[in-house]
Image (cartoon, rainbow, N blue to C red):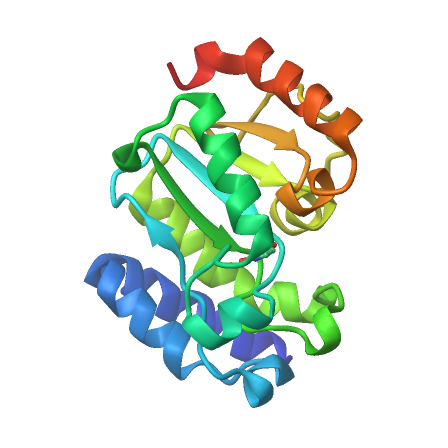
Length: 195
Ligand code: URA
């Protein structure tokens, strides 16, 4: 990606933010900035409240998300729902999206250049939804959102005026019950952030 293209795109993002959330969604649907769009059936923009306390950041759409356009639609989504329930969040309290809006082939991790291309959309969503807390679900979300820091699991930090908390990705909880208990302990320790 050329520097000038980057700058032009940053300018466009600023304009998108001024134009509002629907415009960001439209730009995501039209985006061809990285090769992931070529195999996308649906772009997976995000779902949830337009005034969330908590903004969950996952990794990337999988097969069922690509087919439906809905983030965390598959098995990991059921685990996320359980997590949200345990946190005591109601529908108006949360929003979820991913580091990239198109499915990587074979469910591989998104690449650095793909994350970089999509990052301005993430930044626009965060600016517009203005959550108090960003929960990074796993290492890919951490790398995408604050690559310059190494966060500890379950320990909140302040970052660019918001509280950031790194928790396990719901998919990582599916097969390891010891992780479920650890995740619950992280949640219990941090309830004051969203309650
Ligand atoms: N589904 C998503 O939307 N994101 C993930 O990170 C995993 C499953």
